[in-house]
Image 1 (cartoon, one colour):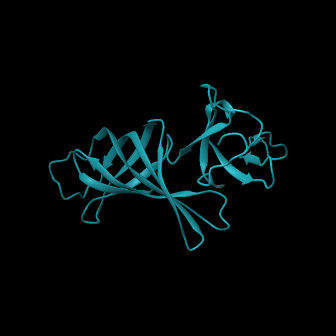
Image 2: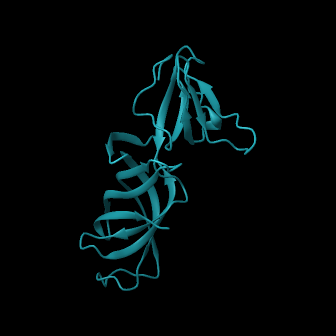
Amino acid sequence: MAGLELDRRIAPGFRYHVRYLGTNEYMFDGEARRLESIGLGYGRRLTFQGDKLNFNDCYFWTDSNPNGVGFTIEAVREGDSFVVVDADGQTVATVAIHKVEFPQTELGTKIEDSTVVKSVKVRFACSIKHNKHHKHTLINVNTQDFEVVEGVAQLAKSRGQKEASVLCINDVRFKSLGRCTLLKDN
């Protein structure tokens, strides 16, 4: 976003890191915040999720910085966990994310039946806990593997939802499991 122009890919409900263009300075202490609303008019107010319920100071106007600001989407973060489904559709493990590589890159946005769906390339380090009844009997299920993997996260936000959620992460390749899909572990 430069000056008054707001990129149409920026959408409420998704988490973004926001940086002043021309600097290495990030807003909100470098933390990704969920965009809550985009105001109307000439200088549009962008309001992000705040720390306090009664007083939200996490906002700015599109004309606040003459150089503009840059947005980087955040699809996954440290602490997220997922169920691993192999190419045969079997649940084979669970993973916990320990470190996420920055930046996560938005590959595309589409709207399907009032739902905004974003594809985001992600790369992260995770621990893998294999299921006891896994078909590959050579895997020691009593240990946890640690791998750095990448994939394409699918995020969706339907009309009426406050926050986008990760539907899945596709095309993740593990050394011990091959190509898999990760589903959000609720």
